[in-house]
Image 1 (cartoon, protein in one colour):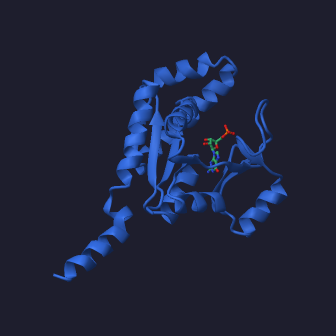
Image 2 (image 1 turned 30 degrees about the horizontal axis):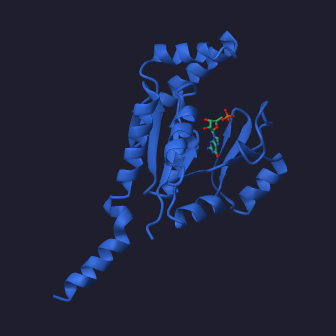
Image 3 (image 1 turned 135 degrees about the vertical axis):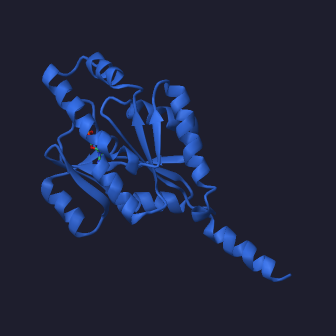
Length: 206
Ligand code: 5GP
């Protein structure tokens, strides 16, 4: 059986990554596995341990680092976030494409460790639209919104490190594009080493 693809999705806060993941899983739930990260930040209202995140103490998180139980981890706004290794490797082995929705430092570490990983960056069509979406949530103060926009400006410096930029103008279209990009990764020569070895061996018999 073919191994699954490791796909990393990052993007500005307010780019619509969460809705995009939901749409993709709703359409192709059997094909994808969404990794659940560990974090030391406290749960927000409505969040559940083991669903949005594994909420752990700083000591527990540091133990996971020591035991090399994480594929990558990063410190983001004062808290640790990391990707547990076991689930990701198990799902890829079972042929499922695993999606990590993580920030930039973590994404670059994943690429170093797994050069075949596909890095996708999601952005709204313009800075004005990003501001509109952040204000539209109606849950944050002007100060927080400005802080997120400033952070987006910093993050924009790393966009070229990603394999593809996905403009999330229309959720359905963007989800289709994301699915097509991940699926086309299965056809790359790097993901087909076993297949290539087999046909070479067969051809040698002539
Ligand atoms: P939030 O606290 O809003 O849920 O997440 C903050 C940031 O952490 C988001 O950009 C999210 O993508 C990122 N993040 C979530 N899980 C991980 C992880 O396992 N590793 C890294 N590096 N970033 C993560």
